[in-house]
Image (cartoon, rainbow, N blue to C red; front, side):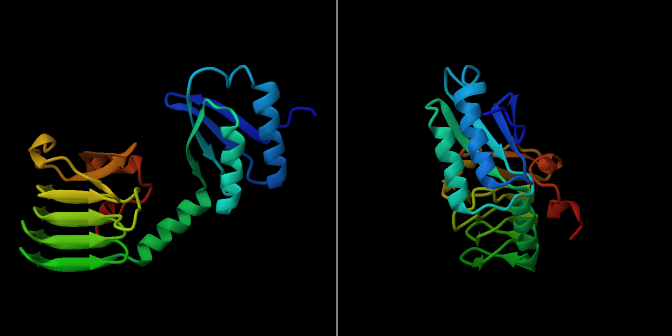
Length: 221
């Protein structure tokens, strides 16, 4: 078998990125992936554990097809698949998120619980003892001083953003934040919480563009 050019392998700081041609037959991709792992790139892909990210371009894939890609990569015992990403799926998720965005104004006081299937934008404050629980993102254009749970059905890509982040507790998917005194910066800048490798992190929303190409907080909604 001669070497094909449907797959490009690039080294990055975090490991390797596999760029898969989104125009060829899926079976051709699998054949070439097998070939590169066992023949042309065998020496490169040997050694210690390597984190792998797979980029599918605009190709739409089923979960079964993703599992087949993972299965081939895992035949090399040192390749640890971190993500399989498709631009088509990201666009679909972004559109879905916009359609499900709920906007509400007012104050959520102690004892009140607001739940929503999708993302929520609160034009107001969340007081201590109050709670917001959403399957999508949570944006608070005010003080977030209560409990906020984003990605409540397991969406680890969800975020929680607020003009003033002073929560009693944050949750994203199944991950619960550390006690606020351990990570609060005391900075008055607008911040957001997100998951990175399963650990909750907090950063200024000026850095949100690194995760989101079209973050809602930049649109003046």
